[in-house]
Image (cartoon, rainbow, N blue to C red; front, side, top):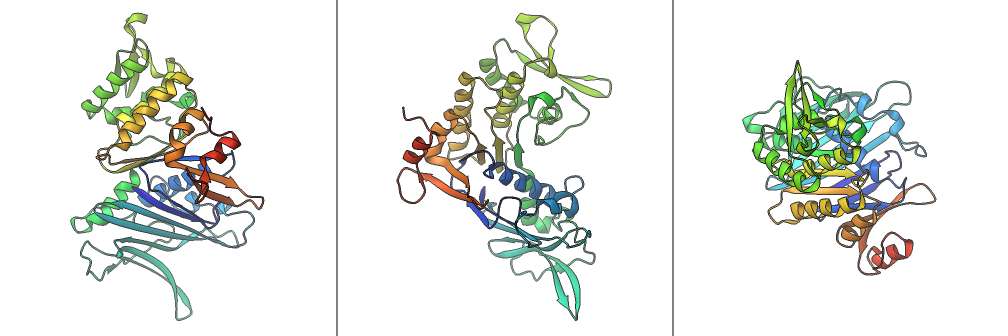
Length: 380
């Protein structure tokens, strides 16, 4: 479970810290107050740490992401994760250059219950800068092994292969991969897949490829199908049949005819519903964090509450190993979650982002009464 994130000198976020105490968290605030920027940082850190695609510093953290009104060239990021019987602490410093030279990792460190797992640092030795990377096995008394070759353009965690004596480091890397961060865009959801993707991408354009991967667990697909039969009128089952070198994902509606409908042939609202329920019913079996930006988009009012109930049931159970973080402007979600799980984002006149926890009381955060006064909650 993500317990804390710290961001400094990234767009509108300067010396920004946020802590998570609940399995479900809601981000509230006006447009431009930094909510989606937090998701963007999580996406970038995920890509960088697991080495997804071109994960060099230059590609993941361009200079244009520096806070415009700051003159500092150092960006800092920190993550605290609870899991695997302890607490992981990850820190990263990116150093940008005055000239056109590419940025580089200045420092990267990972610990588990205060014991080091990996450490990269650039230090000055005898009037020159020396890069040094050290990794540590699962023995807390291990003095570490210095890597013979170092690449300051990448995370050292991303290049570490799985090994039996580095299980704690491997667990962290796999957990970071299970940061599922999405803003559903049904207009780009394709019906065709040529490979299997273990996780959805930001806009869920690879839904069909993700479904192909999920089909390996028929139990989850069966439960998803049963739920969608309740939600989508006339829906019967999925078909994911091969056509040449690809698979085509379609849905059967028997009352509308024998031929199934390709995913691209149903409405955008139906595609959004399918994606949202898949995120709940086909979640990973291990600890994971699900971040959804405005899930209410493309949904009709009567469709929001049932999905919200399913989400809350999934993540509020004591045995739940999942965490959900939601950005929303919708009254139904705000009324349902704000009092127990709400975080208020506000941009000050100076451009900085101020964060407050929403509380029942007037002291210690932003009160529900104030939210009602501001028009974000309906007092029924």
